[in-house]
Image (cartoon, rainbow, N blue to C red; front, side, top):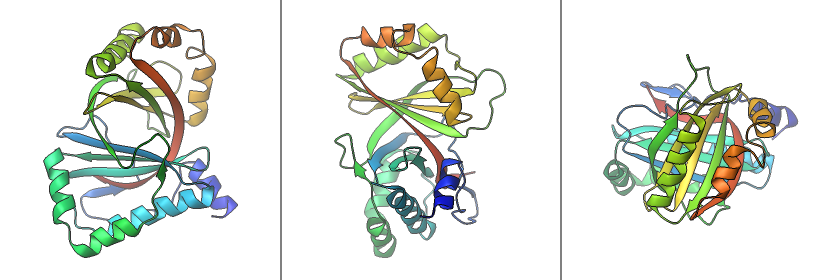
Length: 249
């Protein structure tokens, strides 16, 4: 990847996946859209800006030629601002719809997807983990268009600990997304209750950096609350830009 291509990714720009009837290409997903029954999230380390671009382009090309069933709502990959991470976020109407697609797809599309460069999970995951959207911090007024996604992850000892974390954060913060440039935060709980992922939308990566230096700084009320919970281990955050993929209209 050239330096200009890398700069374009960091600015949220990318070559279009290509026109496809009924879908928006290279767009941020609608996290709270109706009809989502299961969310697949995975994250990996592509090793370098060149590897990151290869993962994004390879998966996008593989999916361009794949027939998509009615149960498919979106699949979007993002480039980490660190120049190596990749976030993969997919929405389906149900777990059964996704499993039927995986079992029943033609050999050609399946081989194209398998042959696309794949990121290596850096948090012990061998593949995507299934989640359900639990609760969200909503926008303040008319939401701005997102330019950056911040993935915030936690390891939890079960559903009770996961819900205590999310419910407590929303009670503490007040149910509305804070921070200048903050749009919304969407808390997903894994099916087995051992992971919480906050898919947080921001206008820019810089806006989130300012918030980290302010109300989310160590020693503040949010971090103090998280640190006082039993069964909750913070796993940090990463910033992502440059969506690549398909979102059903």
